[in-house]
Length: 602
Image (tube, rainbow, N blue to C red; front, side, top):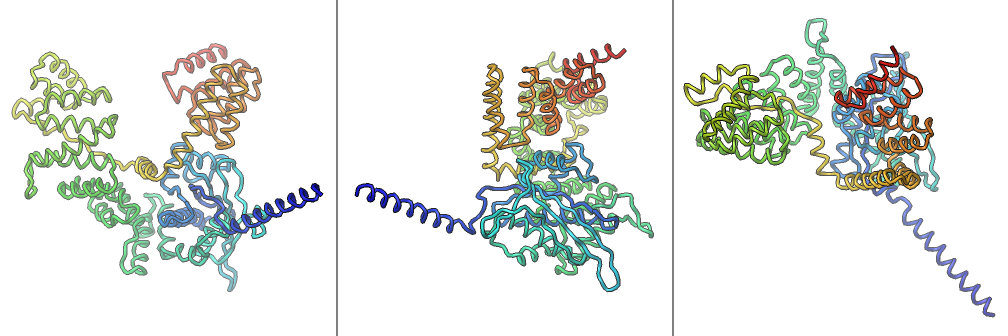
């Protein structure tokens, strides 16, 4: 009887558990497949047809879909962030990857990892020429790769099964933007499943934000070199961008196409046509995503056109909206220059000097290693006759740049004013050595006790990398937490290695590689462990993997050079030893290896 009772209870418990599981499954059906934030990168698509006139289409996919995902990011859709094309190109240049060549899958993953992307979009397309009444056709295939493990992202069906399939679409070339929207929607659907709140029509409409002809002209302009000319002798690149602006304005009630205006500004700046450059840079509004870069160069061209008051206003607005060091530095430098001969209504020389000094003081505190800011701050203190403080700050500037003749000159005069004669003479000797215009500035100082021939220093180039890093720092606490976890795991593995506990180190490293399969430092340490154990082939394999994912790991190059030298494979040994020297020309191990190789090959 008791057994029958227990059996009934057990059946009841199992039934309840079954119902709980079924209920949980029903509740999760259609819920977001991921609650984490993904960062997505889109590479230009590859043209697999012979029609090179349509090469621009591949770049257009990167431009259009990146822009689309960026606008979804602003809306907070699906916890998605996007790596901009400019960010991607910066990393490509750092990795010495040509912008005109599509990288292999492995190199694409390396590029994505260095950009801190978690998802990578790759695609191909082919173009079939028009035949009779059939329009030119475009067929597109695309896939999404998880950067962490290099696996393609699957799609969850309604019955819960996961299928791996390419996104495969085709339509007339005139429907290019529709195709781009459809591809983007399918990428979002693969990631979010039935929980995706955006319909395909909504995403397609967003993809058509820029008029199609204007967008085509813009992309073609991006792919056209500066020196290319039309049959009538006009610069082809500028013509494409002007057409893009015109076509955009026609369909958008005279609105400005911001990307095209920015590129025209850069084109004319390279031609040294400052007024035209300033005109185009100034067309962008503070609400445009490219405004910070345009405003930076607008301020610079205004300054060079001697519109310094306007330049100061431009940099003030830019500094307030972005908090960029370069904006604060240029604002402070221009305020200080204006303070020498103020013509601004309701502002005295002292007011401008104090404003410039305040801005540079804050900048110097936030970026103590920035030699340009440090020089300007020291110069501002000198102009304010705070000579002792000026000498201290300028001494730091010469430590950062030991050949800065202007800093030595100002420091010498500041020390002279404080009565420190011998130190002043020492710094003046350095100024004579490094300052080409010493005689000129010394004559001015002796006549008027002024230093107008020593200019305050402006940043001349907008550092896109700094801007993107500043933007990302504000929005990625979750990514920072994940990076800290990986750092702690690597540190623990290194401690095990140092203590000779290789098995425990390997266990920690394997766990780390599950979370980040392209962590170069992990492969380096695994290589060192195998080397210590005498497993040379495994060591070589892991060391090569380490420097593939992170080429500046000098320790990996040196270790490989030693292995190949030991094997008498002098060509490979020399290659890795010279790679190490390129990374650090003063590295004694690399220098010694090169000498050893040279002796043994004579």
